[in-house]
Length: 464
Ligand code: SF4
Ligand code: SF4
Image (cartoon, rainbow, N blue to C red):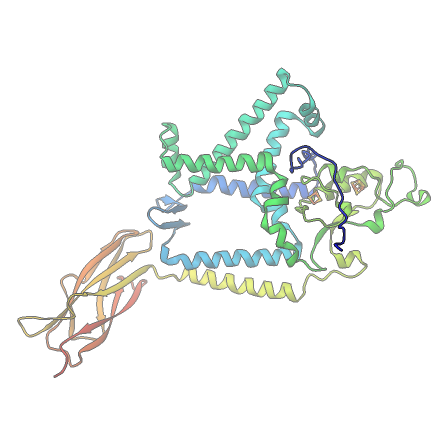
């Protein structure tokens, strides 16, 4: 006989399978870590908004010119052939993330993630228009009055302007920003430019204005796999339950020991400042972005109560269990050595990149040609790419084969960033001994600072 399966019928909640999230109203906070985060916001956003306006050697200092397939970065020009360096950069970014997370937890989330940084600005604009936490809660609950409409409209105006400026700046990394500014004055953006300004602006507006903590909680993949990088010695923001419990309200003058209480006065300040709306006293949670707002809030409360700071603090699981803190451990040493080696190799490689691409392609139609004077000629196409931001005068020669001469011009002038396909003919006055010789074409400049070698083949008739 079939066994019955017990089921629990949940109360009906309407037709929706979706539970709306309660809006989080983070309280404003001042303190050591809030100031550190503010400094990070200024530096990172300052760089983002200023860098595209900087010029370097007559070019935009940082420009990813996709149609021309050239990336300008502080006087260096990167070509599609330099894609390897971009890969290296991504690997370095990945290893850095592992290293810093293993040492100090979610530093990236709390101080440098674009979501955190832009949300901070949007929150600041919101406070400017709608006031402090309690005023914002009241305003949202109040009916639509003239004042509410004015305040909400002012916020929307500032948010949209800032989001569009962000979209404009983002596109300015891919299209010369001075041209974009000229187009902005006459409202004559190209179709793609208008699309990306709108798209990036909308993404900023939506993510930093409305989604906020939902991005960290539900959309960010990093939050999911970070636990793999944590161990018992990773710095995390924790509530010291041994010191704080049992929690309870009391007068400032009361002695907690006499009342049988710990140091937590249950003021909820740590919960009110939390941008993700969690209670750190429940332990380490995936939603915690390590912004340290709760540390600042709790330290301020401890100061008022005359207790020692650090009821919520950066600490490690080992320390909370009564052990010692170990910053230097096998995994951090491995990450540090790997990161150091990668950074060294990357810096050396970037500063010693060949400034020139030389390719020698033999004529496909004829291996060789016999000339009327009894000599042999081979034809090639020489492809030269000047990867630098300055013009170059190059001298071409064939090494170790005095019998081979370049007919025509052996000097070439390339403009900055020029790609040239030059027909080239090599002439031997006598039939070579071998049917097929390896040759080395050298392109060098006058002062010898540029010298690139390219192998090729020279063909003659086969020996009878
Ligand atoms: S801020 Fe500190 S004292 Fe207040 S509830 Fe949080 S942990 Fe307790
Ligand atoms: S729990 Fe504390 S550190 Fe974590 S997100 Fe909330 S305020 Fe920031």
